[in-house]
Image (tube, rainbow, N blue to C red):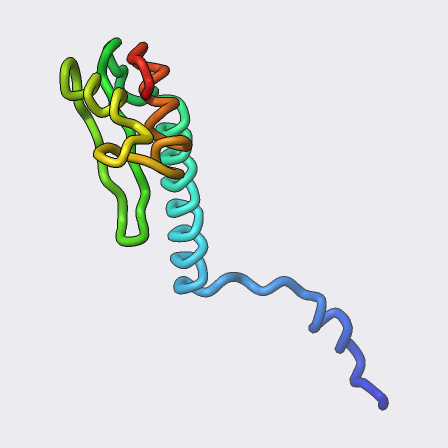
Length: 109
């Protein structure tokens, strides 16, 4: 196929972005910057400190999650009843609550 003279330069020439294209590029850059700032803030800011003798754990389940934040006798009672029929048992106790009890310095089981 024979192409007209100057076709290559016409095809390779950079065209200026339309105003809408410039706005969309600016929006994408601002959105990317905001997401990066949110990620940095989430990584840099530490979580809340849990005092010794307190449980602060999120226990997942099939219908959501349960936040457990207990201190003192209530936390001690949760940790002492792990693995018993009247307390938390199974995977919940082994994977989530027992490590939280150990971190809090409370006896497990």
